[in-house]
Length: 134
Ligand SMILES: [Fe+2]
Ligand SMILES: [Fe+2]
Image (cartoon, rainbow, N blue to C red; front, top):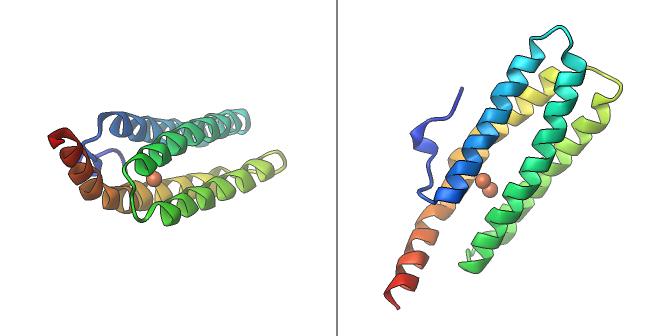
């Protein structure tokens, strides 16, 4: 599973960030198959945590700016993923979480970016067009 153009939203900064998320996951998968995976997985988690935080802040600000009606549900979905990631990070100190982490991150990326993020695209497109016409 990797990046495909069907995941594009048409919003440049969001698309670039989504592609970075997929890059982080690809690195994560490489890390999992390495001998010294403990530290590699741990650092990939730290990187993912930091990047996801930035991405969610940018996306939520954009949705708020354009009065997206499903904003609360979208934020809740972001928070649920952050909580799951934080939980895995805590466990990563003592146990091998590589399998659980790649499974969580991959399924979330496909589900969230492919469906929930796609759901705001028509609203944002209309809102931006309306803004441009004013
Ligand atoms: Fe997103
Ligand atoms: Fe999102």
